[in-house]
Image: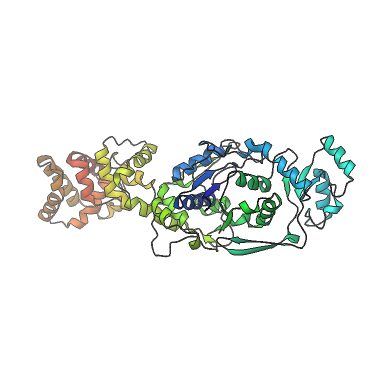
Length: 502
């Protein structure tokens, strides 16, 4: 019988959620949903020195915003909980002790000071095959001494004993056959002095306990694969071992190395899904959400970083991604992050999203600027009129704000060089016409007829009219703006601008 698909996203709650982490969650989610499987969020918080308050809640908020909803998680308990590793602490030591008893691991009593001294003495010191027999551990100490130290609860760790002269091989779903020389891998700590497991032991124990079928994780974890494969073997679980897929890195725009938060800060774009506030310093790092990205666009652009469906299609919603996703189409090579392309995705999503579905988001943007749009029907009309001009949601406050608030200042410098008394007279005459025939839909006809009668070209009057209505050289068709404002408001804005033009 085919194994039921169960996958997991297992972040550490140490700070902001990098877009690479969200992509890992997304690929896990797409694979699970395509195979009617289960997507699990497991919080790997065993390293208490790096734990950051609020980070777990932040991670869940980011996933919810993206529409990547776990089937099992700390918030949605299933049959395989608990879903925080810190709450599973009691389950790990027996496995570590079993490995020691079977000769696959050993107790190491070296103090931090002794290890520091060894690192100073030996350049690029690694605790492993070449050095373990010169250290203070259960391989070098008499058995009675080891028992005495353990009975005295002397601080110690448990390390895996990497075998010598072996090759660990496995089939990666993305990379094919991958091999490692065990002589090049050090004896990683499995259980720390505080009784907490390291990532290596915990991830294997929990993946087995939660019946994980496939592991999608970043390429940076590839060097850990031989340790994990040996642990599955040494613990007698090799037949239950999941299939592996190591995802390509998301690279800096120039392709030179993995994209980091520092790169985003330097180049002026976010790398986190949502704003992250450091609880110690109070510093806020901007996220894609707050910059003005739609969640669908963010998910879409992440999916295309290292994957495509083999066609020219670039715009996908989540359901389409679920239907078309395939591991075979994931690239082995890293994917360069292009922020201009990311903004293009968002612009396309805004263009193709119905005004009604943008309504609340645009209201939020206007509210940030202190603008209240009370008439939803009017706002939907405005959104329809301007959304093709918006790349980010934050653009709506500029592109829509003047429909609800009069301009505070005018770009008079664009008008004054060619401003004449005849043009001023034209606008005063048009105001009079509007008050006599206040039918907004006829404004363009009135305007052009009056221009012809005044001996002026309509084109010479359009820019002044735009600046009178919106304050600057932007916005949709100027008569579309005037019709939405209505004759009374249009007249009032022209009057106010004329006073400043003189």
